[in-house]
Length: 58
Image (cartoon, rainbow, N blue to C red):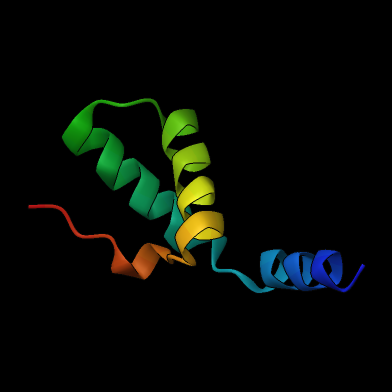
């Protein structure tokens, strides 16, 4: 139960505008769908503990 509370707290405090700005930026560069990018970002966040600030594209 503690893990669920932690996840909900993190979702509440995350910068959603920055996340969607990053998704739009990646979408323009790669042409991949925004929904795919959203789920991919969430998967990576769970698997690697990654955050959107670590994403860089050339």
